[in-house]
Length: 557
Image (cartoon, rainbow, N blue to C red; front, side, top):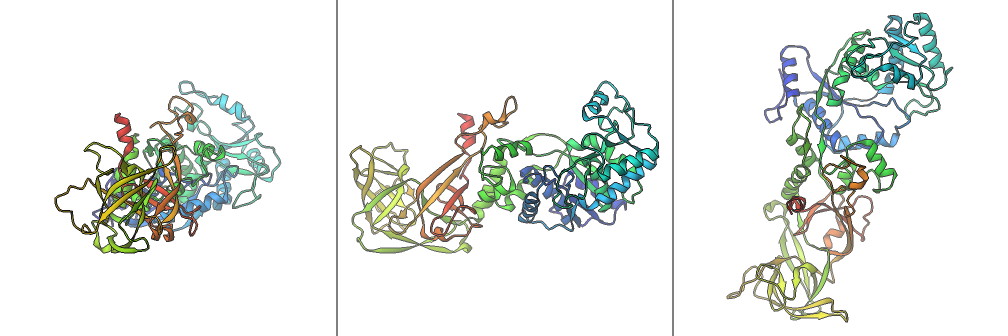
C-alpha cells in the first residue's frame, strides 16, 4: 500500500508507482538523483531533485544521490561539493551517497561478460569512421569489419585496453546489437573508450578506460536496487539500450525507466555548455552569480528553498514539452516572501530632508510592526531625527493630483511617523535639488490631521543614524524569453541585468543582519545580504525580486 499523503501532488509517475506497489512489484520505492559533476546544478535540476526526493519521502522510500562521474575531463571535486550543498539546501537528505566510479570494477566485469556471450566486441574504427558507418535516420548502418572478432581475441584486446597498451581513439568496446535498428542508439553503441592522462576526482590515475553513460547508468541503477529510474525526455530514445544492457548481463534487478519533460524557463539558458561559457567568458561573476539560473546563484540572490519546491510542484510533471513563464517562478517566491519577510525601510536614492521644527539634538523612538499581516513577527524601533533621507523619486516641485508623494507646499506622511509639509527646496549652483526644508505636525502620530488631505505615505531613514549600504538591483540575465533561439545566445544578454547603487541608507538594524534573512524593503522589493561580499559595517544587499512583475508591463508596452 502506498504511504503517500493526500496532500502530495499527483502526476503520471506517481500513478505508475502506486500501481506497481498495488501489484506487489516492489515492497518499497527506491529512486535516485544522478547528476554529472561537470558544473553547478540549475533550476532545471531542482525539478528532478524535488521529484525524486519527494517521491521517496511521500510513499515512503529512499533516494540516493549518485554522481555519474564517467568523464573526468570535465568533472571536478568542486562540482561534487556544490551539488551536495544544493541538495541539502533544498531540504533533502539522501539515503546513500554513491559514485558511478564506485562500480568501475563491476562495470568492467559485466563488460567481460558481454564479450564472453558474444554481445560486445573491440572495434578498431576511428571515431570518424564509426560515425560514417552508423548510417542515418533513413538508411541502415554498416557493420564494423571487427564485429566478428573471436571472443578470445576480444577479451585479450579489452584487457590490454585496460592495461594501457593502446593510445586514445584507437580502440573502443562496442555492444553487438543491430546496425539496421531504426533507433540509432541501438546500432552497436560504444560501451568503453580509452582516455589516458586524466586524473579522476575519485579514482585518481587508476583507470585509462572509461565506460559510457548509456552503459554505466542502467547498471548503477540496478546495483543500487533502484525501482524507478526517472529521466528527462531526451533519454526516451535511450531506454531500449538501458533495457538491453540489463537484459544481457547477470544482474538481479531491472529498474523501470520513466521519462518526463524537462524544465524550460523563459529568459534563461539551461545548457551546461552555455552556462560554462558565461562563467569562462566572465559574462557573469561565477557559477553563483545571482543572475545565473544555478541553484547556487538563486541561493545567493536570496531565493528560498521553500519557493523553489513550491515552484517545482506548481509546474507539475508531464510528458509534454513546454516553456514556463519566469513570472511563475518569481510569483512563487513573492508569495513566500510576502508572508515571511519582515518589513524594513531603505532609501536607495537619498534626498536629504531637514525637519526644521524638530529639535536639533533630539531622537524620537517610534514603534513599527515587522509585518502588517502577522503580529507574531513582533515590532521594531524606528529612530526619527531632525535630518532624514527620503527617496529622490518621492519628491517633485510640481505634480498633478495623481502623484501621491511629496510636492512643494504639499504634505505627505512618513511611514510609521508624522505628516510633514515641504516648505522650501534647496538647490546647488547647477540647479540640482540637494535638500528639502520641511515641518512636521506633532499631532499626527497615528492619526490623520483634521481638515487636511495628505497625499500619501513614503518611507524614510534617519540621516544621522541610518547605515550606508550598497544595493545591487538584479534583473533577468537575458532580454529575450528564448535566448539564442534563432541566433547566438550572447546577443540576448541583458546589458541592464545588474545596477549597483553605492550610496543607499538603511535602517540601523539591517547592517547587522544575517545572510539567511530576507526583508521587504518597503515600496522597493525583497532583499537579502550578499553572502560573499557583505561585511560587518559594510552591508551589500541583493534585490531578490521586485514587489510586482515589471516585465509583464514591458511586454504590454
